[in-house]
Image (cartoon, rainbow, N blue to C red):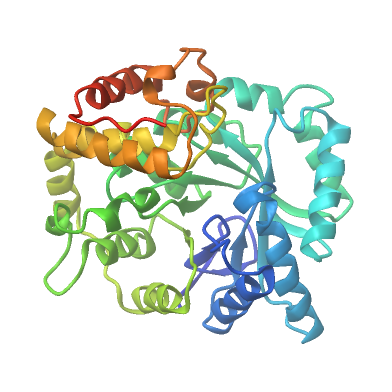
Length: 380
């Protein structure tokens, strides 16, 4: 495993981090915790989680693993968790949230605490209000409950730079991958040049890259898959301090660790070639994060948005989109999903939660049109 210094700290962190959003929820918490221990034994020492991840099981799973590590006198690892400005708008509420996470995680302090999911500048401004979240986090830091303050962002690069220029945080976590990097790379490069840590999440674009190995084969070198190329892009980039990978088996842990040891960074020529291929299409794709699951109509919004990716990324024909819409409609029926795209009320709740700032309402209208054109629309 390759290690690097997290800028502004004395901590040597593994260039591969364990992202706690992709646990296999068919397994027990104990079984998932064993995978964390395996990753630790392979050299991974940065572990990222958050309240609510994996049906609110993620912090609990990490807590099982961390207690086992502490019991074996193994304390050379670093913990990251988070809270949102709207979830903890006051000093008192975030102090309570920090203490709760400490209890669940079973650790004496949180090494990297993130102001979570800043999607627009108003979220940052809410965090910084007098008597608000940031003030509470400073108190926790003074009490030794937190080492370092960071933020996680779903903003374009220019807005990331604005937050960094306030000098309130030592690093940023943001969604960066081989498909959307040009949308946020200005923020990455700025952070790197000015001594901030950069943690990259969502390296496989929410599973989009593995699902399109054939179409994205041009991303890879000979003998390499598109998935491996995407992991290599994040892990080997000198501008990225840590690349979070969501593991759910040992094979994937081994693969990421191998790439950390052997992977070569993409050249500027490689990156320019990819930018020209995709142009602006990739900055408006759904990553499957699921934050849009707030629909009062029970619409499977992530499913519809991932379907729309086929048009956005690969410019599929109307006939192809209708065919795929039938497949999603059948899935919705099988999974007993209540709402359909045509049931959208245009209330805007999903768009306010979208980390990619996508025009979900308009895309649902197109999905509804494709569904209406299926020859044998499935009905409940």
